[in-house]
Each structure stands twice: as C-alpha cells, then as structure tokens.
Image (cartoon, rainbow, N blue to C red; front, side, top):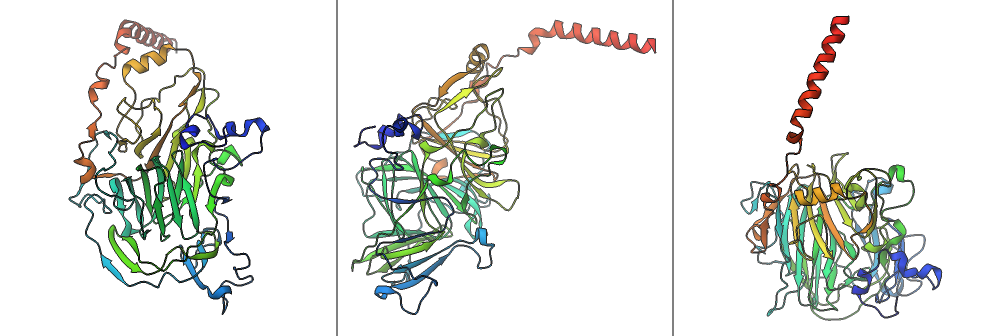
Length: 490
C-alpha cells in the first residue's frame, strides 16, 4: 500500500492483513493517513502524559500537582461498583471543568428526540419495514456536528437509565470554539462520508469511513471536518457501556480483538478565548460559556477513555460446513441491558469475508427476529437489501416482522452450487440491533427520503408444495394403509 493514501484506498482491501504485505514491510497499526499516535487495548487502565513526570505516583490527588495543575476525577459508575466494572479517570489540567459561567437553555431541536415511549406524540409505532434514501448534507448555511444531529428511532428514555437512540449527522462545518458533552449516554459514531478529526479531553482521535469511535458519557469533544462535508451514523446507549461480546466456544481470539482498539494520547491546549460547551441532558440542550479551552488536560490515567476501532481489522467467523450462523457472529461491540439474556444494543458489521457452506444457499433464510434492526451502509453494495439501500441510507425492521429475499433471488440461489466465494468485497454495512422495540421520530417519519419496502416483492413466492399434491396424497394413503395392516397384525 502506498505511503500516502486516503480513506478510499482502505475500502478496497479484503482485511487489514493485506496492508502488512506478508511481512515484507514493517507492520503498522494505524492507517498511513492518520496523523496521531495511540494507546492500544480494550477496557485497560491507561496513562498518558504530554509532559513526562506530570502524573503523581502512589496517589491520585496530591496536595500540589506539578506545574500547578488541578486534579479532576471523572467517575462513570457507582463508587461501589465491582472492580471489573468500575469506570473512572483522573485528569490533570490547567483549569478544572467547573470553571464556567453557568448554564443557559438552548432552543429545542425539533429534529432530535430522547423520549421514545409510545405516549410521546412525536414518535410513531409501525410494523412496516421502512427505509430512507441517503440524507443530504446541508449546503448554503453553516452546520456543525452538533447542529447536524438528527434522530431516526429509539427506545426508552435517558432519565430511566436504560434505552437506546439512533441518529444520523450531516455537517458541513467544523466546530469552532465549541465543544459537546453528552450527559445522557455513550455515542458510538460511524462516519460514512468524510473523516472526523476529534479533539477530546484525553487527546485527539482521527476517524475515517471504515472506522468507528466511541465517546462516552460526560466526555467533552470537538469535531473538525478535514475532508469537508461529512455524514454518518450514531448509536447512543443509556445506562450501560459498550463491551466486547463473549466468545464462548470460539476461545480467546476472533471478532474484534482487544488489542485493535486505540485510545488517544494526552495533548493539551492552553488558550484564553471564549468557548461554548454544549450539554445534552435528557434530550434537551444547554450551553455554558468559559474563557479558556476545555481541552487543557496535560496528563491523565484511568480506564474511562474514548476509543476508536478500524472495522477492516474485524476477524469474521462463519460456517464451514452447512447452514448460516446467526448474525451475532458479526458483533463488534455489545451493551448489556437489565435482562441478563438480552443485550440493550449490539453493533454489528457485514464486511468482506468468505462464504463457504454445503447444502445451503447464500441469501439469508426467511426469518422473524425478536430484535429491532436498523441498518446503514458505509460504502460499497450490500446484497441483503434492495437497490435503494445506498451508502448513507437507512433500513429498519422492527422485531418479529418477517423478512427475506424476493423469490427470484431465492430460486436462483437454490439452483446454484453451494457457495464458495468472497462476499461484500469493497463494502461495509452496519447494524444497530436491540432487544427493545423501536419507535420512529417525526423527523424520520415525515422525511422525503423515507420509503417503505413494497410487499409486492414477495407476491411471486411460488407455492411449490401444491405441485406435489398427488405425490403427497399417495404417500399419506400408503402410510395409513401400512398403519392399519400393522394394527390388524397386533
């Protein structure tokens, strides 16, 4: 792979392993066009210093921190949470976050939503399979990441501390002297068009299509658009944090490996200038003003840190005998619910892989799932949806609604030899999946990009069984006759 490459070059590789050139070149962990260095691992305890020797050793909050810095702890779990699930970070900064001018209500954003209970008149319940063409990035006016948030669907309410929201963002402008804090929950951000240069309190993250980033509850960040206008998807969870799914009989390795998750290194900014910090709390927006940069953290340590992951590093697991395995094998990250056997949310990808199986066919079998499914397409073509499923678009199916391919595709696959092929080459599709039922927002429901899956696509599903009526009748008659003879013998 050439030394100077753009995000689009990585769309052509089958897996990250191709970048390693079979050991002919020194291995590298991040894309060549990524300007930053990172700390690797998942759910580890990290530490990072922009100035060596800043972090106090043997204690967290000494009477005097070096260089006159302030100590600030960010806790994201109950103080008495078990050690393995206790989340916190210590930050050593020029000024603590408390140095601000108070909070001011912002006008309600009619395109965002946080309450998905059916009693809310702004959300819609529908069993219909619904999809949206790609949403257009605004032109003619300045729209940054925060202003460009639009909510599609979700479940629950952040004040209940369990729920989920799915959003899209469309932005044409970098955030200028503006930071954002989601006080409701964690953001899993999936850029689809245009890279994101994200400044966080813990350091910078560069995220491009084919990668994801998780900014957790309460963490301040700012989004710049180095490639110009950007669009993407967001999965927001309330009351939980993302985890790696258990591997069970797969053993120690596979799916998303912990070493491939990357965390920022400390990089501080000391500027005396006016900043606006926007807070989202129970779906409402507030802002506070401060006269210094919110990104003045010189050093930090802890396990509550934003992170990113390159989806081309995902190790796909699949069938190598018969049948197709449940889509849980495509799970990158999961978040627990209060139901011990059903997740609050799963983030899945469908990326380049081999499809090998005997006595079966490639299209997904006809199915009804208990899960709500909201899909997006980052790039390429995805064979499991209609031609109108395009990069930047959305497809939604609520739980227990039947779905599957049209008859022509089923018939062709049934007549073809067993699959032995590479699929999804040059493509990555994503799925936000939840055990909870979704309601759809007014913004998405009334969008001119919305269209419904036409049930006529299944009108030509042939009743093959009836063509065997005489054969079946004869078999049943023979069975009855054999049973009577056996009974008489007894």
